[in-house]
Amino acid sequence: MKKILGTIFNPFSFGDKKVDALKFADFRKLKDEEKTVEVCLSALGDIAADPSLLKDYISALPKQIMQNYDFWSGAIDAYPRALEHMPIGVADYDLLKKAVKAHWNLILHFEKKIELSQELVLSAFNEVRPNSYSLIKELPSRYINDEVIDRALDVSGKALELLPMSDRTRERCEKAFNNKRSVPKLSIVPDHFISEAICIKALSRCGSEIEHIPNRFVQTDEGKKLFYDIAAKMGKGLKYFPDEEKTPTRCLVSCQANPHDLEFVPDELKSDTLMVQAVARDESVLRYCLEDFEEMYLEGAFDFDVEHVQSTLKKHALEKTVSFIIKPIRSFVS
Image 1: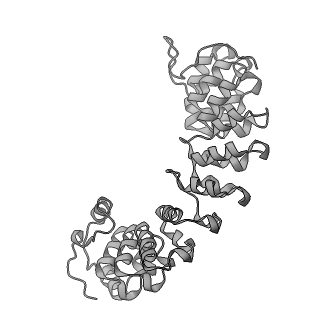
Image 2 (image 1 turned 45 degrees about the vertical axis):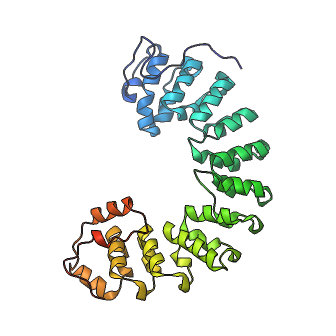
Image 3 (image 1 turned 180 degrees about the horizontal axis):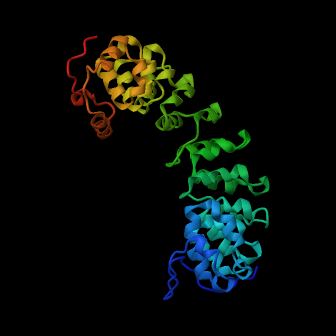
């Protein structure tokens, strides 16, 4: 494809020539000869603020601008979604590559017009935009190979969830859970590939993953302590704890991480400290408190600064008790 040589423009500054940001309402009133590359790019800021104007903006562009390489190159910085409407013959692969790095979804528009190169497909998977991993599901299967899959897993461990079971190899499962940005759900991993390390990383994402920890890892006292302690610390897992694993400490820690875990705390373990700190973070969990506590709370028996409780909780390890920051008017007696 032929590249029209020129400078890549910033929509608000063009070398020594500066153009003020232009409202679309004013832009559309201009004559075609007044709509230079600089002027057209200056109006894109208004389109970025209100994407519903994009189609009208494209319709208002002169034909010579629609065929101008420099305009589309500058549009990548101003509002990359505009390139959904770029005539594909204007671009070379350098421009296409820059475009998909800026807005990965553009590759789905380009794919309908040209045959994609491997390099261009790989460029669309961008760590800065982790949702780009979903391209392995959206692109035609002819573009998906081992290199593309591995690249998607580099971007997000969640890419494993989109792979057919036959492609979820041991190496890919381990790679997915080693991703520092995001890991997949444990339930999609073939059982024979699940290791202790994978279980720990799954639980470190969300305590509810305790539901999918294979029994073989929680048969010993050591295994139970390891996994149930992590699940409690992360919150949202208490629902799946056997009653014998719901200790006072785990219940308190779990409710500190997620107040709604109070629903799954046995009544005999609902201490005043536990209930007060849960309600302080989310008053909607009051319905899970003991009846006497709920009545006293509604009567105004407790006076504490909710924002102070919440901010202090964030500054301390989850294992720390929060009773020292709660200031009841009168002691609650269960």
